[in-house]
Length: 200
Image (cartoon, one colour):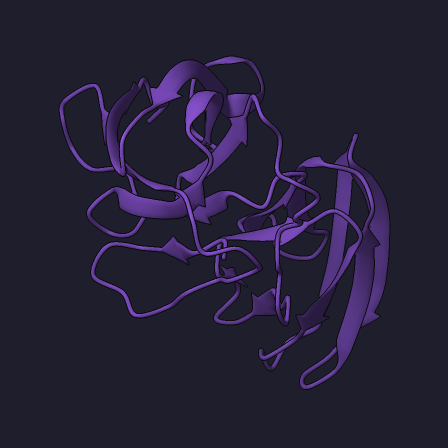
């Protein structure tokens, strides 16, 4: 089983085989303040055994003139729904390398959808409301999750050995917003703290 369990949460994303180690990740900014909604991705050197990220029902709402939630994680090839929960119309678009599209104006309780076949970061905007910003993080590993309000997340059922840990956040100052760290997963539990330099 591949299980992704945010600290303090009962939610589980599961897949197939029960063995493996658990990785606890804590993400903080330069002042030691927890960073929420950082996307954690683990790429074991041994590979993922053919497992894929389970997106479930992928939805990016437009609510109160903002994208809700601000960031979602989906596996490659996932189709995401974009329902409008506002009383005003929206025109959702992206110019990102991983996905370029535009959803022409649509109103309350209407929805559009978009498929995301390429791994990467898709920045969302609205042609009508410049303040609206959102992100779809398209991943090509089954081991991915977002940090909670305490900047914490657990990723379970990892194979032991070396791995690359990628941490993405829209305000991360590094190129592409993604910090990459080489880690070693030994024993049944591994712990990793990551500090990010964030833009204001």
